[in-house]
Image (tube, rainbow over all chains, first blue to last red; front, side):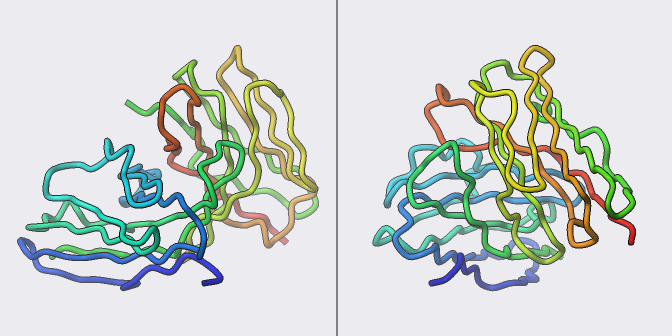
Length: 115
Length: 114
């Protein structure tokens, strides 16, 4: 696609429920990243994929969070047993290759609200 | 522990003047730096980068300066335009960290007044 697509754009869920957030990266981009931005905070790194493998998942806050990427394309971030502190904008980004000199292309994010 | 700090939450500048956005970092291993711009309800957009082998990088109206000894970088926008009004994030990474993740600051909201 022309850009990074994320769905849903907004999600309201009850505490304790599971949610799945989807990311469609730019076609051909091998690297994919998940970040989140809580209110008043900077972007917090969650996980990075190169192809289908995740060399760095150090940012996942707890074992309730998991992510996978299939076919070197679509990625799903799953949050189990959601808590109110999980409320944030979840941003996905992709890059053609991992390269320090160039920024990623971000999607518009999924705003998750846990009530 | 905030490794990348943007101490000014907001900044207002008159149209046509220079905007200077500042960023400080604590980790001396950081050697790559990016600036992003973010409009409401959109994802951040990459603006400009600099590596530690340089102290300045310029792209049109945007210039980033890096002072390694002070662990400080700044983004200059000249001349500022109303369309530049957005939140600006700086981000830092280390090539030796074994990962391509960036650490982001909390952002500075720039308002350019017409």
